[in-house]
Image (cartoon, rainbow, N blue to C red):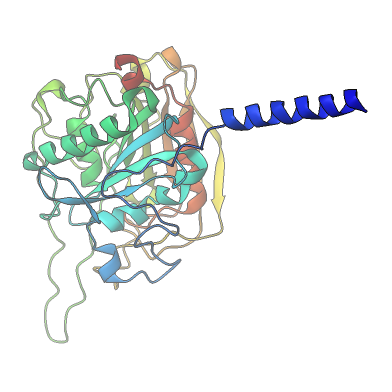
Length: 361
C-alpha cells in the first residue's frame, strides 16, 4: 500500500510539473486597423450586390496618406505562420470592393493562408501619384507579417490594374519583393490582340436621341524606369526586366486571338504550351459591369454566369518558373470570376517558386 501511494504521489507531481510548463496559446495575429470577421466585412451576397457595397473603398486606413483599403486574412493566423501576400488592383473606373469580388480571393484566405490587400484610388484611374500609397501599404504589411514569413508575394490586377502591376512590378521598390504577376485581362506579355468590338457598350439612347459613342479607352503612363520608357497599351504588356512568375487570365470574347508563343516562356526556356485541363464552375461570379446593365457586348462582358476555363501551361521552365494562360470560355472583360477558377489561380500562384522576401530578410 505504501509503495502504491508513493507511485500515485510521483505521478501527481509529474502531472503538476507538466501543467506548469504549459503556456497559453499565442493570440491570433491582428493587423493594425483591420478587424477580422466572418463573414468578411462588406461581403457581397451571391447575386445583386448593391452599388453602395461594391463602390466602397475599404475600412483600413493607410496612416501616411490617410487613404483606405481592404485587408482580408485568416482570423486564426498564428504569429510566425507562413503566408502568401497579394496586392490586388482594380481596373480603370472601378472600385476597391468591386475588385475584391471580381477576383474573389477573399473567399480563399482561410484555406490557403493568404493576406490580401485591395487598395482604391479615388480618381478611379491608377496614376504615378498612387505609387507611394501602394508602397506604403506593402511596407506596412511586410513589417507586420515579417519578411521571413512571406512564402511569396504576388501582384494581381484587372484591366488597368493589371497594366499598373506591369508598370510597377520591376520598379526599384517591387523588383526584389514580388514573386509573380497575375494579369486579369490586364495585358499579356506577348500581345493578345483585343477583339474588334472591345470596350464598354454605349448606353441605350432615349427615344428620339442618338446614342453616345463608346467611351474611349484611357491613356496609360510610361512604364517605370526599370522596364523602359514605352507605355503599355490595352492587350499588350511591356516585357518586364526582372524575374517573376506570370499568369495571364482572359475572357475568350475579349481577345481576337491568343498566340501560342510567349516571349516570357522563351526567357525561361520553357517547353510548348499545353492544356492541363478545364475548370468547371456551376456557380456564377459576384459582379459585372453594372454601370451599363443594358450592355449586350460579349467582349465587354455580360451578367455573371457559370462557366468553364481552360488552363494552358508552358512546361519545364528554367528554375521551375510558372508561365501560363487561363482562358474563361464564353466570357468577356468584366464578368466576375467564378469560385473554382479563382481557387485554381490561387493554387497555381502557391505552387510557383517564391521566397524573394524571405531570401532578403
